[in-house]
Length: 344
Ligand code: AHG
Ligand code: MN
Ligand code: MN
Ligand code: MN
Image (cartoon, rainbow, N blue to C red; front, side, top):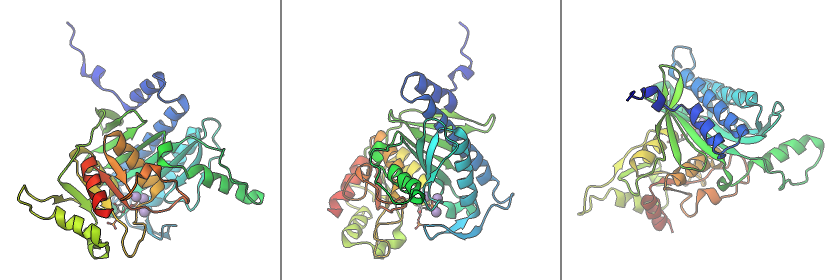
């Protein structure tokens, strides 16, 4: 019998998206939005890999609405993401970590999807070429809860904010691209978690993992322990107990690279827990609900794990403002339930 060429076994992201569309899981418009996001990630991947060659390391010299020193690549990757979404013609509103307010996309002519994104996550790592990523979430427009607003000028802005501020349970799709030793695009459209690795031979994302399931428990914990003294006592006790070489076995291992996408992806595949708690200085922690906590929580739940603010599911939380922060505990079900017990 004729041996199947391995080409027939290779499934690209484009091919996978078309199959989901043919199966009716997503519509043609959402397929185009997801495809345009993967294009943006490919462009950002090459910008990140050549940052020090093309003088794109270092700071832009501006402060973003988060109060952070914007890196040059924060700004550039935000433009790349926005341009790809605009030219898709299916995006109605975009909300970005690097934009003060949500932006209505005039060029859209059908679909009108809402896309929230962190164009470059872990950007403090860029100059040392440590893993970074991009994170995105996609909502369908929801006009019904429009507050009546003042004069013409604020109508669009208010409408954008009301439309964008949806709980993560409304997400139609979410994912991230990790720029590391491999470039890995991870996505869920509500039917499990799929990973695609960029094949530099021909610049396509190729399916490398299907229906990823996070281990139910894991011995890796990934917390910003430099803030230990600022944490409340219940959390200190939790961390102390993780480090206690109890008679039954060795204590947990700490892994933390300061990039949510890298720390999360390792947690998703190896199991364990990632946490960015609130502390005395930042009472809601550091990570942003809309375009960091909610998308990774959708992914982890699709993989059989949990995403919590320490007390409730991240995906239930109704955002009230675009850049609001939230404490995040995410990873293996048993590990997240364990920290929730300590914090109760
Ligand atoms: P961003 O680079 O998009 O602003 O996000 C950085 C976040 C997250 O990626 C990471 O887990 C965390 O900040 C690291 O914070 P510390 O520098 O306080 O460890
Ligand atoms: Mn930032
Ligand atoms: Mn981030
Ligand atoms: Mn960012």
